[in-house]
Amino acid sequence: MKLAILSLFALATDAVLGQEARCPGSDNLTVQTSTGTYTGLIDPKFPRTRQFRAIPFAKPPVLSRRWLPPQKLSSPASEHHYATRFPPSCPQFVTAVTSLWNQNLTKGNLIYNGNQNDSSGLVGEATSEDCLYLAVWTPTTAAPPPDAGLPVLFFMTGGGFVIGGVNIPWQLPPSWVERSQSHIVVTINYRLNIFGFPNARGLADGHQNLGILDQRAALEWVRDNIAAFGGDPDRITMWGQSAGSIAADIHAYAFHQDPIAQAYFLQSGTVFSFSPHKDPTYSNFSFVARHVGCEAPCGDDDDDGAAELDCMRQVPFAQIENFIGQYGDRGATPALSFNAIPDERIVFADYKARSEAGQIARAPAIISMTANEASSLVPYPVQNLTAGPYQPAVTAADIGGVCQILNSTVYRNRMGAGVLVFRFLYAGTFPNLNHFKWLGAYHASDLPIIFGTYGLLDGIANTTQFEVEVSQSVQDHILAFAKDPYHGPQKTMGWEPLVASDLHGGDLIRFGTDGKVSQHVDGIEIDGACSGVRDYDPFP
Image 1 (spheres, rainbow, N blue to C red):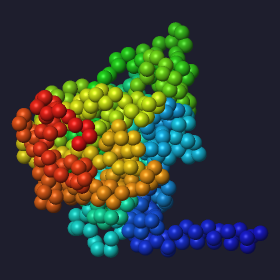
Image 2: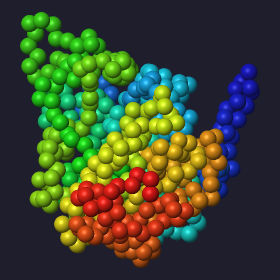
Image 3: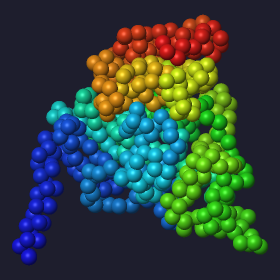
Image 4: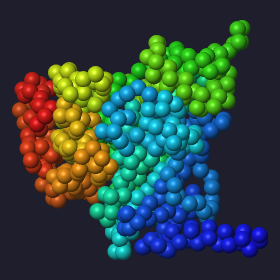
C-alpha cells in the first residue's frame, strides 16, 4: 500500500512537472511579484504565449470585507501559487430570459458557467465572492523585450455592471498575443451588481462604487508588477468594452491627476453613454434586505443602516443574487437596479461640466463603435427572427450612440495637444457572426474580431479569409496605438487623429465593409447625423 501511495505521488508530481517539461519556453513560467510568486502555463495551441490565469490583486471581499473597498494583499513575495486555472467570476445571475446572448449564434460570449447552461435562471455556478483576480498573457519570444518592456493592454469586460469577468471565451487573447509577440494583455474581474454597486445606507461616503475601486486596485497592481512579466508600466492602455468602456472613461475623469494609464481605448461606450442616478432613499438595497430576512424589527432604530448592512453581510451571496435575478426575470415591479452612482468622488453627476473644466486625463484615446450597435440591445425578436426588430428605432438608438461618442471626441479635442482621439467604426458582417442580416455589425460583434476568437463560432458557419484579414487589421491598428499612442497610428498605419467640426469630421477608419478590410472615411459621414448634415447608415 505504501509503495502504491508513493507511486501515485510520483505520478502526480510528474504530471505537474511534465506540463512544464512539454512546453517550450517553460523555464520562464514562474514570476515573482510583490504579492506572491506565480507559475503559469503554456497551452500547446499557443506555444509562444505564457498564460497566468488567476493572480489575486486584492484580499477576498468576503464576510466583514463584503461591501468594503478593495484591500491590499499582505502575502509575502516568496509565497508560491499556481496560476493555471481561471478564477471564478464575481457573483452574477445567469438569466433564463431568451436573448441573443444565450443562443448558439453568440456561444462563448458569456462567463464559463460550470455544469449549468447559459440560461439557467440561477446564480452562476462558477462564481464566488473570492473573485478579485486578474489574468496576464505575455509572449515567450526568445528575443529580449525593449529595455522598458512591452506595451500593456489592460482590459475590462462589459455587461452592464451586472455580468462579466475574465473567463469569457470570446474575450481570451492568446491567439492575438501569439501572433504579435510584441504586447501583453491583462484582463480583470471586478465586483458587479449589488456587490459592486450597492448604494446602501450603511456604507461610508465614497464606498458605493466598489466595482470601479476594484478596477483601480487592479490597475495599481499592474503598474507595480507588470515589469516582472516583461511589461512597461509606463505604457499601459486602459481598455474596456461597453460597461467596461464606460468604466475606463470614468477612470479618465476620476483619476485625471494620476491616471496611471498612458492612453485609453473606449470600445462602445463613454461617460456620456449612461446617466448616473443616485437614489437618496437607498430603496433598492433595503428592498432586497427585507426580502432576504434583514428587515429591522419594529421599534428598532437603524437610521444609519448599520444593522441592515451587518445582517446583509451574513446572507449567502447566492441567495442575494438569486433573489435579484429571479425577481428581474419575472419582470416584477418596482424594477431593481444596482449600477454606478454619482458620489462626486469616483462617479460624477455632470460630466459635461467636468469636461468643460478640463478635468479629464490628458491622454490619447481610441474611441470606437459598431455600425448597428443597438440591434443586439433591443428586446430579442423571438417571434420574428427573420424580419428582426423595427430598424428605424434601432437606427435612432445607433445615432444616439454616435452623438455620445462625438461629445467625448469634441471635449478631448478642446483640450489641445496630447489629447489625440483616434476613431474607428467596425462594420463587418460575417456568416458565423451574423446569421440574421438585420443584426448588421451589432454591439459586441467586434469582440471576437479584436481578440481573434471568431473561430469559436465556426459551428454556425466557417470563418472566412476576409474575416481573418479584417481581424488582423483591427488588431494591428490597436497595437500601433498601444505601442505609441502619440505617433504610432500615424507613422505605422497612416491613421490620423480625428478633429471634429461641423463641416469636416477628420480621419475615421471603417473596417470590414464594401469588400475592403479597412478604408479611411471622413468622420462627418458618421458624426454628421448628430447635426443633421448626414443620414446615418447602419449597414454601410
